[in-house]
Image (cartoon, rainbow, N blue to C red; front, side, top):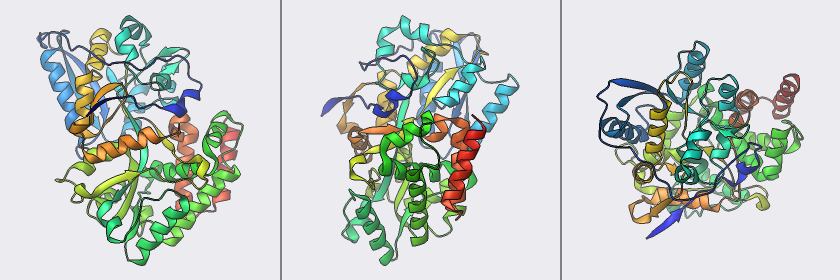
Length: 435
């Protein structure tokens, strides 16, 4: 069965960034097969590690472009792990040694570099190619738009989901929870049967995983208005609803919903627990599909599905944490912007977007013809979560890099047992002092 897919980022449409485009059929041309005889090299830094299955797909795109592009250039990629990426790129930006093309997060993260004059304005290239511009889903280009112009190209979207082991759920006659009370009942039943409910990382390098869990809880307590209020400064970080979310999280920790010693467990270790059937659930992002779908990496691959974390208040069901997954920007160091733009067009054409979806579970940022027969069951399940969402809140560290990182740090403190009210009071004081 084939149908059109246009996964919309509904919640981010009110984030205050200007410009935008509608959904349409995506395409991009790699040009002739002139190859890269001139020897000109464009450097590119991407977010990924050898353990990330999707890196293989990214390398395929690079290799095919290098073999067949009309610009006579070679893309030279460097993959940097998530935990090291921000530090490395910031250092390179400060020393004016950044690559020609960079992976970037959206919103305030890229805005810092745009304001610093480090990023090429791509609006003219989009305006010159209406078909390319109109291929992007509503709400995607907007997140990379500053003062009305687009500075980055989104290649994928993502959202936080709760993965679960269907075999374990069947063993204990458990249903997908649709309310927070049912979620707790599922976790309690698992505990009663000696099964750890949820794998969650909580080391300093993985602080964002804990903060996204608390953020998801807060979405289900107070909805998009809380997120929007914190973003706009009309509500505080120590808002009653945010404190409640942090306290509920601490109650879950005390009940034993997470693996023993989870505050010292890394992201890869938490994933391994779920992949080997040692936990029933695993809270992370849609980008994990490729790792969880692969039986060579995940021994429970055939038993994995997902659902959206249920809301404490039913009126806020299906408000998700998420945003863009992979975006790329061209730096002002680049001496062949035309070729770099050509590469980004090639990356986002329908063939490559489809390949990344079907083979690696990367949710498209463009509207493509969807062939469900080529998708894994897990990819299909994640798409259903996307389509069911009623609103979306971007990660706080993307909404505001500084305050979001402080929220991540506060979340780690809360995970380690610090008073939730006190930790968020301190965060609010920091926010007020750094206006």
